[in-house]
Length: 261
Ligand code: CAA
Image (cartoon, rainbow, N blue to C red; front, side, top):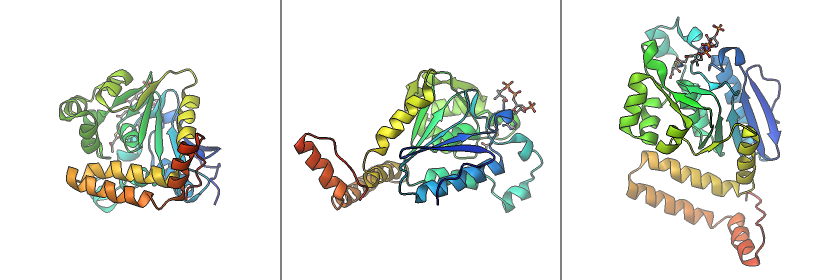
């Protein structure tokens, strides 16, 4: 099935082997409503199964990547509503995506918006980006993985600071601490992110998938378990035609042409 372009809460675009998803609820700073997440997950499903697409970029507007969970949708929920329906669970789909994902973050990335960005493989920030986990100001705390991924990304001391005070962090501080992969200037921001995505999309998709799988396993495994897993995946990469092509192209002094096989 081809990627649809008639969603209500997101805009989709295909650029060569890259799928660009733009969160599109500007009137509420891309607050993550149930319908937005449903649209996002539908698009992710289609992209994952489309062998012509290799990389996914998620972005928002220049004012906000996303200002978090939709507070107006959340306000009437009770404890038992959350027991019966974990509304955050579907947000996690992107963290299980088997293709490389890039969050191109501009403006506010707050609460669930910051958490969604942290679920992506690369987090590229515009120089104007402001990150924050302000849930504490609402009488709750981050629960889309923020209490787990943020300390892993920036360390306990800074994660406590962010989550207990609810303060915002600019792109420079975020990059210094390791939350952000790169900071790019505002001018031509999304084009520059797409250049990075297009570059990645020219590499062997199975090799990219193995690499991201190995890195993600470092979250769950001890060092020695992780190294055993890495070595198994590395052995598997020697069954790829792309592995032969990549090494042969190096010897032939030409650019490799990968076929994702
Ligand atoms: N949910 C619903 N609506 C939101 C929203 C959100 N998270 N964030 C912004 N909006 C709406 C505002 O209510 C406003 O709508 P109206 O025009 O109808 O009043 C519109 O978007 C524009 O927002 P502001 O007028 O507030 O814009 P601003 O420039 O003055 O401030 C802001 C921008 C600092 C981001 C501010 O909007 C803000 O603090 N937003 C809330 C951020 C937040 O608390 N996020 C955490 C949500 S909880 C969460 O995510 C839970 C979780 O981890 C699972």
